[in-house]
Length: 299
Image 1: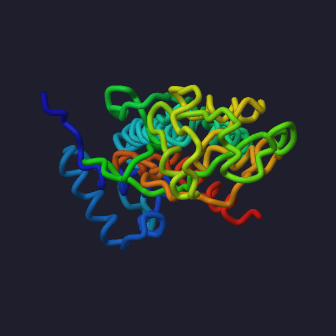
Image 2: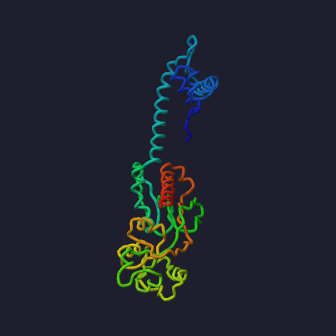
């Protein structure tokens, strides 16, 4: 059933004119001409079939019908303003669901989220982790961080950061009966492997090492597990730079060798294009990039 609504532009003109009891002041508020306000009010009177204003000397006053209608219109417009503000507040605050990979969440994102919450306490960030690409609509995801080549059909994908691959270990491994001084010394230590990709063979070849069994050592389903083993001094992990940068800064890990390999994939911020119109999504997206800039600027 069609709604019997009066012309909305005419309602705005009537509301402003009734508020000021002046077409000229209403025109200033609405940024239109006096004549435009007059025409809108006249069209509303014709639509309603009643006179809303009458002229007294050089001013206008509301008729009895106009007075009653003004109260009703004012209440409706106030309700519309309140609903609009509430909707804007909801889009600027509340729950923000971020989909990402387990290791990236543990080693990069979570250590930084406290800063985001301090800056934006009105936004409640919730993480959804996993290897599968999230279905934004079905899973209620607002924004995602993915590791790949940036090919995400139907989605916006912005490269967040590239990476390098290199061995990391605890400072303890520089000492002991088999100190880790050169890549050849890896034959005395446990190698941790990433279940999703194992690049030890490639790295050892780049380092010119052929006396180390690249298959030796445990394989973990997530990168952060091998990194944790390295922190505890149990072996050496071949790690992506983004996942160990904080541990390197803190001294929990060191890079025993300077040889690094570029990583084919990169981290991308991924989202449906229309999601960026949501203020809380844009705030989080901008914050992610600001964190990367801060990392790159630090020594």
